[in-house]
Length: 460
Image (cartoon, rainbow, N blue to C red; front, side):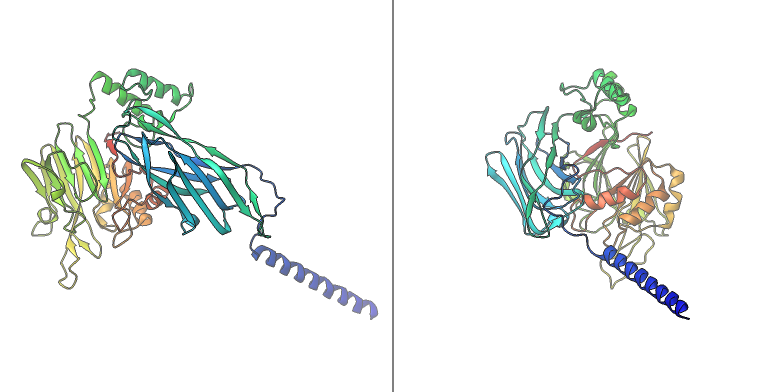
C-alpha cells in the first residue's frame, strides 16, 4: 500500500513539474524580447543604403535612405549628408515608420553643402526598410550629363540597453548615385550610339558590371528592366527606325493626369489636373468624369484647331451603351467605371451631388493598347479585358471611394495586361509610394511610374 502511495505521489510531482515547465515556456514565449545588453556583439554592421536616382536639369527627385541588418534596433541616429549645391539642393524630407515623430529633425543647411538628419527615442527602432526620403531640386543650370555620389556620414547610431545605457553600433553606408543624363545614353558620352547597346548586352551576360547609369537610363521602354529589348530599341534609334521625339510616348503627370504623344505627333491629354507638361498643343482631350481633380482643361496651354474633347457624357449613349471613337489615328473605347460616387449605368441620385457619370478608356495608339480605369471599383466588364491583350493598364488604388491597392491588384490579375501601373494613389492628390509598392507587391507584371516620368510605349 505504501509503495502504491509513493507511486501516486511521484506521478503527481511529475505532473506538477511538467505543468510548471509548460507554464514557464508559455510565459517566456509570450514575454517581449529584452533589450540588448551592453556586452552583446553585432554579427554584422547595420547598413544604410542610399538609392540611385536618375534626373534631368530642373527636375524634382526623391532620394531614399533605407536600413538593413538592423537586428538590435537603434534609439539614436545622427547623419551628416553632403550635397553639391551647384547641382542639387534638398527641399523637404519625409520620415517613414517609427521615425515619423516630432523627434525626427531635418536641417537642410546645417553647414555649407551639408544637411543633417537627427533622431532620438526612448525605445529602439527595429527592422529593415525605409528610414526617410529627401526631395531635392536639380538646378536648371546643372550639367546635362554627370554622375554625383549620394553618401551619408554617420555621426552616431546607438541602441539603448535595458539598463538605459546607449551603445554605439557599427554602421556601413552603401552610397548611391545621382545620374543626370538622357535616355539611351548608357556610357555617359552625351549621345545614343551602338556602343550603348553593346554595353547593355555585355552587362546582361556578365562580361562587365552594371552601372547606375545603365540601370537607370538604359531602360528605354520604361518597364523597370534593362534587357535585350532596350538594346534593340537603342539600335533602332541609332539607325533611324525609332527617333527620339517620334516614338509613342506617355507622360505621367500625377494623380490621374496622362499625356500621350503618338508617332505622328498627335498629342492627347487624359484627366488634366496636376503636374507639368501641358505645353504641347492638344489634339484630343479625354475626361473620365466631372470631378474637379479630373477635368481641369484650363491646365492645357493651347488646343490645336479641331481639338476633340471627349467627356463621360459624350461616351455614354442615351440608351446606356458605351461609344468608341476614332480620332487622328487613335481608337478610344469607353468602358465601365462603377462605385458609390461614379457610375456608367446610372441613374444619378439628387441626394448625392458627388455621384457623377463616369467611364474608363481603352486607348489604341500606334497599335499599343492602354487601359485607364478612371475612378472605379472592380467592374463586371473587366472580365472581358484579358481577351483584348492589353499592353498597359493604369489602375486607381487610393482606397477612398475607389478600390485600394489589394483590390486593384486582383483586377490586374483579371485584366492580364503586360504592364500594370498603379495611379491615383492618395486621396489628397499626392503620389503615395507606399500604396504604389503595396500594389506592385501583389499585382503581376507591375510597373511603378512616378509623376513627371515619361516612358516610350512599346508592344511586345
